[in-house]
Image 1 (cartoon, rainbow, N blue to C red):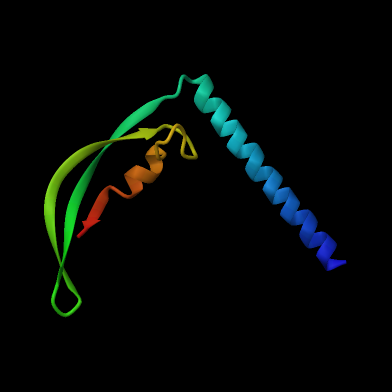
Image 2 (image 1 turned 120 degrees about the vertical axis):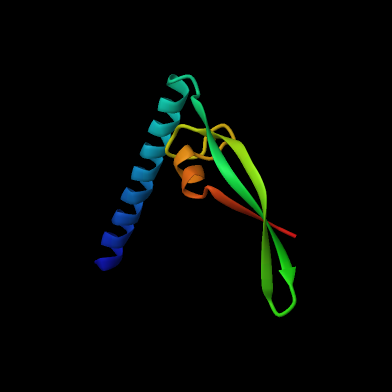
Length: 91
């Protein structure tokens, strides 16, 4: 009995995710595929002895992003890029 309930909840959650993703994609396309730009700080992570790292500032870069809830057209959503405004590059 619990397994039937768990399967129904799982199917419902999957259906909800598909509906939200489809709605987000349709909204994105109907709005004309809006894109934005977020200024990101980039750092170069250089490994040192003793499992230490040195971070060198590389400057700022404007990163294109999609104004949507999920990634669209190969671009990350703007909310995610803003949340990760400091990007590290490993050597």
